[in-house]
Amino acid sequence: PHYTTIQKAAARLDVAMLQKILESFVIHARIKKVFAGIDATGFGHGQSSYYYTKRAKLRRKFVKMSAISDMKSQIICAIKIRHRTRHDSVDFTPLLHKANDICHIHTVVADKGYDSEKNHVAANNLGIASIIPPRYEHVPVYKTRGHYRKMLKRKGYDAAIYHQRNKTETIFSVIKKMFGDNVTSRKISTQNRELMYRVIAYNAYRITRDCLLIWHGFYTAPIIKNL
Image (cartoon, rainbow, N blue to C red):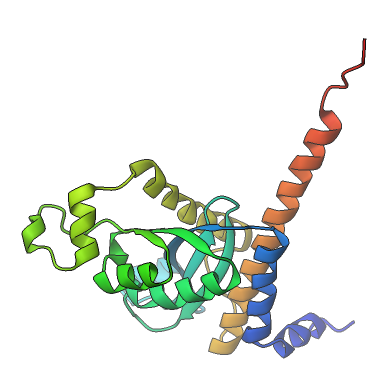
């Protein structure tokens, strides 16, 4: 086949279809309730190298990908891709709705960048417990705005549960180690597809890896003979 065959076949699949494929991994993994973590990361693009852009003091172009993942299985449930600078917090509610439509979320954790009463309310309306530490912890409770933000300061939160959020950074790290931290496509539409394909490939890797570990444990388990 011609060397562009795979590229042309990939271009025929739209992002909506790729999103359906992404959702199928959550169903295939038989996740009953999602313990969700939300975070964002950036991927560089463009032909100039990091060294050149730094030396010439140019602004490096990047694509931002926000993702909501299950912290137990480390499978990505949904993503949002942006090509312009926007605050991470704006993608919190859309990602929460997308993932919750696939499988019910019982808890969501996110870092201080997502601290917003609006985000807490959105989670509560879906019956989801949210752990998002307030940005300004030194500010007294009576000066803190928002019912849920005040409640977090008064009652605190389980640090062990919150620090499961670190797995979102692990997920991004694995994706970048597997596929690189730059996108090679030039057009916005193909950049979106490229990142979707990376996430789908990562999810496939997670599921097959877990299955192989289970099978390995089954075949290497000691045989107990009846006496």
